Amino acid sequence: MRLTIERKNVKVYPDPKRVIARYFFNSEERARQVIQRVMEMNDGEVFDTISPILQEYSKRHRNITKVLYRHCSRLKSIFSDLSMDYEQLPAFRRLLIGSFFTHEYSIESAAFFNPSIVEDPDQRELEEGQKKVIISFRAVGEGHISSIVFRRALLDKDCNITVDPVGNHVDEAEIIHSAAYEKSIFFANGFSGQIRPKVLANVADRLEEHFDFNRLKTLITNLKQEEPDEESKPEYDKVLWLADSYYKISFSLDTDISDRVIFPISEFERKGIEDARFVRFTEDDGSISYFATYTAYDGEVIVPKMMKTKDFYDFKIMPLYGMGVQNKNFALFPRKINGKFAMASRNDGWNNYIMYSDNINRWENPVRIQSPKYSWEFVQTGNCGSPIETEHGWLLLTHGVGPMRRYCIGASLLQLDDPTIEISHLAEPLLIPNKDEREGYVPNVLYSCGQIVHNGKLVIPYGLSDYCSSFATVDLNALLDKLRSPASAV
Image (cartoon, rainbow, N blue to C red; front, side):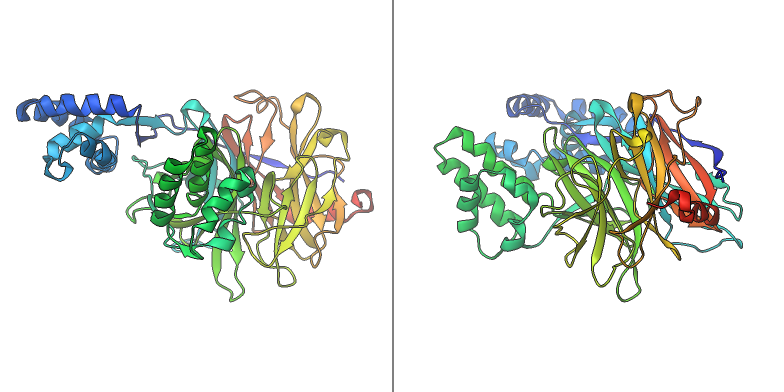
């Protein structure tokens, strides 16, 4: 019995015109020179310089004046060093100074791939058989820095998909640091093991059981000044980066979902945030939250992290820690199992695992459930997002890497009450890159970070060779029958 996979004639391409205005800082010496030169200009020169900039860039950004004011305010310490009163600085001069420390960044100019799909929290104004969905993508821009972007789409009764046009402006979120940290949890973060024990102990000994970000920042500044070993000083910065892993972000209510971009914020993320796997999670009380696991990358170290939202406007960001989260490919189950959170993972970069936890942030003791078995997955296997609950078991889509680094998508069925038990595993992949999909930024790759069931069909969004994303569907019952056949049994 062969499955019929329907590839949809819908492709979502990156839009290189989608830009954000980022803070740009070269060096303190250069910043002083720029500030001093602007301060030497008379009021007329300042106005004549900033006025056309505001006219031009107000068409490209939601509120460019707010951005320029914010970027100028980040230079307050340099104004103080120059014995200048920042608060007395006229508005147009602030805007002009801010413009010198701002640059546009095209968030989707290089690649656009690895989609995940969940039901939109807002299901109003629909016809029978329709469903609104939110699709997340990994977008890559200049310097190969990854961010998370969104699109809204509509599934009709036949699982045809229509993706809404993107908005005219891209908006970054307001960042809100955690009000307080608990010391025992803070230093249990998995990344703390990569900081010199002496430095960690030195910081921890001087902190109260509960502390805030400003208290930690002041302590780090003082300890760096006291530290005689120059090689140890950067280690103190890492402790501050650890605190920067806990924060909240909030988008303006007047933004469309496609306007919202989650761009790297903390030092852990400065080289990108990768492969968000979103899942619609049912809480113990029946309420709905949306979680996403993703990988933060600073150029050397990867840090697994998680975000939580209920409305896709406000997000809580937090790290994952414990010996069970030491690699990539983490995907949360959509509900607790036997009273515990459950996670699919690829802890060693090679095999698939399942682990349980009482604490959604702390993960230990992963249990291996799959190893590469067939030739199309000999190099490595991993999950393609959160498992989907069916009456016959948890449906887990996997990716397999085979000859010529070809990525394919496969399927497995796990036991409902104990997903560490694999019921079956398709010997052949569901999706293989065809001749129209194999060429691109990264050739021969099909990859998905999450799927959804609609009107009896499994909808699979997938990135193709990293240059854009598309969709495929398969009849869910036919797939389950295939997985339950004797030929697929493990």
